[in-house]
Every structure is written in C-alpha cells, then in structure tokens.
Length: 225
Image (cartoon, rainbow, N blue to C red):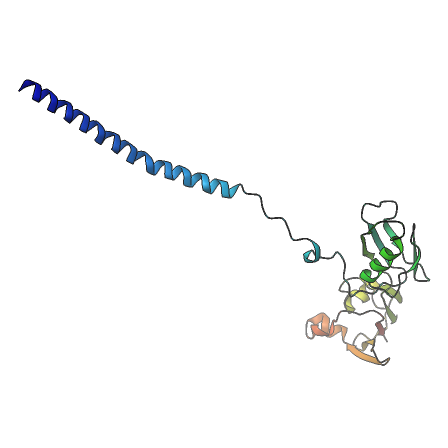
C-alpha cells in the first residue's frame, strides 16, 4: 500500500508540473505575438520613403508659353558642363545670344523649350547627349507705356501682375491738371485693331468699381489726359 501511495503521489506531482508548464507557455505566447506586432510596425515605420517621380513627371523649371524677347536675361544650364553654362546671359538688341561651342543663336521669338532644343542640337557635335535647361531670369522685353499728365511718362518693364494703379505709381503719380476720371488704356488686339478700356481713378480709389483696375498686358498704353 505504501508503494502505491508513493507512486500515486509521484504521478500527481508530474501532472501538476505539466499543467504549470502549459500555463507558462500560454501566458508567454501572446506577449511574443505582441512583440512581433510591434517589430512589424517599427519595420514599416523605418522603411525608406519612395523616391519622387522623375523624367516627364517632374515639373519643368520654365513656362513654355512665354516668348523670349530682346533684353530679356536668361539662365542656361548644360548638365555637367560648367564651361558652357551661363548663369546670366542677356538677349542682345539683335535677338541673339552667344554660347561657347554653340556660337551665335537667335533667342528672340522662341520659347525657352524651343531654345533648349536648338542649343542641344548645336552642342551634339561636341557633347554626347547634352541636357540643356533654359530659364528666363529677368523679363525686360515686355513693356507697357504710360503717357500724358504723369510725372514720369515713358515705357516700363512689365513685371508680374502690374495693374493700372501700379503703373501710375511707377510713373510718379499725376501732374496737377490730370483728368483722373478720364484715363484709358489702349490695348492691341490680335487683328491689329485697338481696344479702349476706360479707367476712373477716383471711383477705383473709393472702392466703387475696383474691376476697372485691370492687370496690364505687354504693349498696353495708359493715357492720362
């Protein structure tokens, strides 16, 4: 009988040991899963960002609708060719520019993109697959005129978003006998005709008709009677 009791006691101890071991494993497994989940999240966080699209998807550094004119200042960059590149090159009065290797090139009347292609074509004899970028650094070819009873009548460069009020300020303001209610803008049309656009300075100044203060276009003429 004593032997049987001893044997039964040993079996109970072994069974309890197995139950304890199973409980320990069960308690540890969720923790391991949680750790693995954390590791996966951290791995996602440290993944490198996707690179930006290149090639045609990249934004071009110039406006292809703009037409280069005399006195405009250009920046011309030829990739990996600093001796050919020019940080600041003015368009001469004859409409041409001069570049090393490429020689004399007519720039006036072309868009920056068209000028890029022409320069690249001239450089192909000297440089393998030249990559050319043309940017307009300063616009001097597009001008407007202001005439009549202003302090400094004349031609002015048309910078971004110049309005009639801006033009009057650039011209030094009115003279004593200026007819501020009778100002008008002469605008050239594509067919060669002119459009007369009225501007009442006093109304605009009072905020009564602000839409009259239009943005000027190239070759507009403001007349202050």
